[in-house]
Image (cartoon, rainbow, N blue to C red):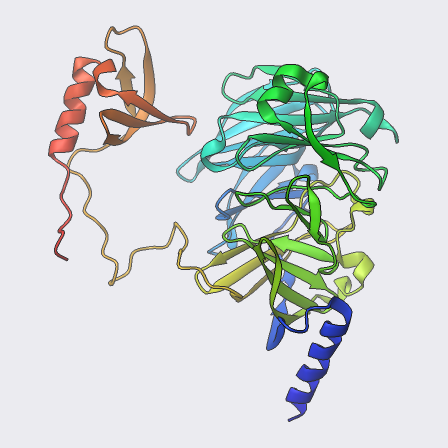
Amino acid sequence: MLKTILLTATFLLVCATQGFCQQTVLSDETVKFVPLNVDYPVSLMEMSDEGDWLYLSHTGDNMVSVYDVAAGQIESTFDTPSPRSVLARGNTVAVANEVAGNIHVFVRRGAEWNATKVIPLPKKGIKYMSAPRGKAFRNFVFVTCHGEGGSASYQDTVNYVVNLNSGAFQQFLEASLVTASHDGQFLLTQQSFNLSPGGGISVYSGQNLLQAGRNARKLFGGGTSSTPFIYQVNAGGYWMGGNMVFGGTPLMPIGDELGELVIPDVSQKLVYALNGDMITAHALKGTVQSLTGRRAEFPQDFREADDLFNRWRSRSYRLDHPFAKTIGNELHLFMRPAGASVVLTARTKAFVPTSTPSVREKPTASTPKRPAKSIAVAERTWTSAKGQFSVRAKLVGVKDGNVQLLREDGKELSVPLDKLSVKDREFVQEWQETEIEENPFE
């Protein structure tokens, strides 16, 4: 009876302070945040597109840790000088050295990380890197560099587009921050984002901005009285920033009283709002629809709001943000408190479960593993029909007369079969003929 009374009282308090009494139901479950088990101070964090990996940069220790979200442990580390901003896309990870002004590119092969190149830029002070996600990523990264001093974020800025494959780069703008949309169709710029709460937001066609630079046609502009660092995690028109959700055209706040901090879910269109000792789930369906709430518990050192929440005014160029990933019936949450070098994480029952398991989930007795092909598809050299060009790649598949290849740097290629050498065509034919057929009647 006492438990019911306490839950009811908390529910009424949430209704009074956050205004979603009709939708929110408080669960008796508590979401407990604890420090992530890592041996080094964390400077920044970034999550992979699918939410399988969390990348933690350790600037003072000259290394990056790779955290396996599903397994809940550090999976690997790799050395890189003074890492700050990290951008992860597929098997490629770009790490910026702010002081030296260069980008180190790493490619994952199995469990090993290999440094492929170092790309120096004319201007030092790399603050941020952005790029489209998923299939829209084409190895081009947008990089923001700032000079030194209190006015650098609006008086001494340069933006580059960098090709991570070739190392080529081009200056195209002078904005405080450039962020790519999920599909790369739009580029969003922000001004004075670190020093002034009145900084504006402008949105451009990505192609037009790259071609026309400062003469590009602005599609729309705006902002709020306290413009936070704005970013996307899901495909579509929703953007996150601090404790707000933006959407629509022009970009407008559609959820600006959710709490102290919004944590987006990379696996589905949900956000989780933290407000004191409460966490609430909200669905993004045209508007922000409140679903349910739970108690939140934090370590003793982070129970004061000023120490816990990442208020943008005190971020000091820390352009990372919180992440969440739902794997089946379990929700994983990650946030970095303001002014701290630790990451707080929580595992709890999913607010809205997904049917998609982790991509690294091992087969069980109920999900038998498909037999391997009798011909290996290891990396080999492929040659063009006339012998003028070649590439090292793995054979992934054949579709509609095109051979699907996976290059050493993680880039996928689709090559017409008749453009390959006779030897390569014979290899593909033999590979197809020896493919083990799955039983259609099981």
